[in-house]
Amino acid sequence: MSDQLDLRDLHYFETIATLGHVGKAAEKLHRSQPALTGCIRRIESTLGTALFEKEGRNIRLTPAGEVLLARARVLLMNADDIVREIKDYSSGAIGQIRIGLVPTAAHHLLLPVTRILSKEFPNVRLKTVIGQSDLLNKSLKDRELDLIIGLGSDLDEDFESFPFFQDTMVVVANSAHKIFEEKATIQDLLNYKWILAPKSVASRQWLDQTFELQGLPKPDVQIETNLLLMIPSMIMKTEFLSFISRLNLSASDGGNKNLREVPLKETTMQRNYNVIHLKDGYLPPVTKRLRDIFIQQGKNLFEQH
Image 1 (cartoon, rainbow, N blue to C red):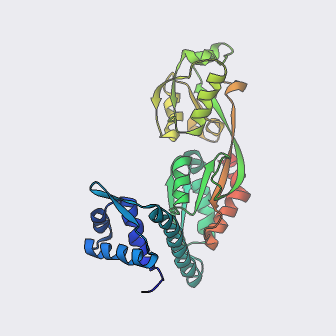
Image 2: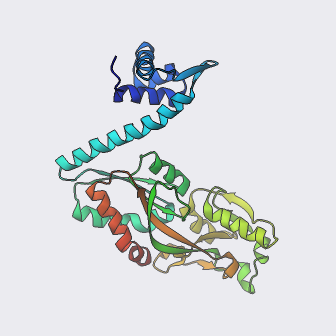
Image 3: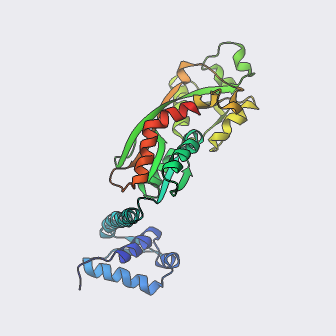
């Protein structure tokens, strides 16, 4: 019996382990259950140990299976990288870039960066995903994305990060709001209802913590939304307060001229935008170029938008 593991068998094993059920794996992989059972038996025979044990109608990994799953995922990801690298090499480094952006970055950067990229690499295919940092970080970790434009400094140790722009978050209201009749304090903010991002978003967590550190209740949130780019237009037409990027107050962002900052030191938050990729992941030449565009020109593109 060979002591070598087959990549296809490892792929089937990874799917079975993820779903915890041979039947579901067979359906997803379009293979028969006996074929997948035979795959597991081959791997167990090679390794000399059981990989699964029954758990009701499902199966679960043994400790040896857990170790193999972690190793198998790395091997399969590396194999995918090899295929992509060779294809890029043989095609002159023209391929697909998979990039994720947080909403504000997408709003300000996606169009100008796409214009720059299309001039240099007219045949490149760009796949974009817009989402919050936690979703993008997971997609990058799973190698579903090549590059992300995200926020914060507390990043995974497997990530390589390059900060390129410092943004400021502030409390805002429509320019005719009653809060501007007198100089406001942080406690005055609690007299009004808010539109805010979900609690999983870092800026929302920072704002809630700010009020708590002052010995005050958290803001009274009447509308919670993950459609962050819609918040400025919602604020302009209501009496709600919100907490958004100061970039939304820019005169060049014509639709948001009716927004006004509530100037308070306590509720002013600094945050960094970073271009992030995996330390050990393969970066095609065109993806490296895109990374460099963000690092070298991202600050100006933010400020010029």
